Length: 92
Image (cartoon, rainbow, N blue to C red; front, side):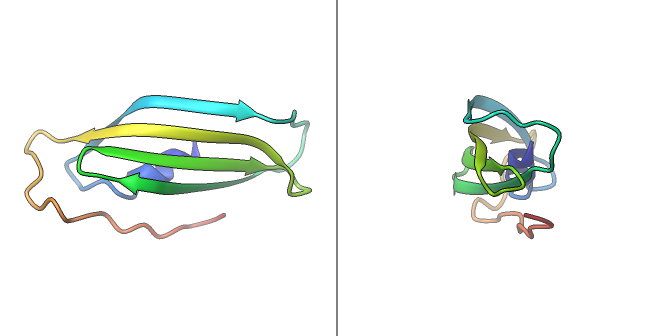
């Protein structure tokens, strides 16, 4: 799911992520067609990240929206609490 790309880009090398909650609203069916996804991080704290994803069909109409909350942790703990991974989108 595109949200993992948006969450994963904020992880440090020794961090792991687990999903706390995920909600998907399906607006209309998708037949055999191309879809476009756009995911973004709404808020990222020290331990929790909240993101959203919108999915559109070829005509640009929304077919689904997803919200996801993840928690982060590492065995060694966070040495630099202000440090974040850098997100560089690869596609829309």
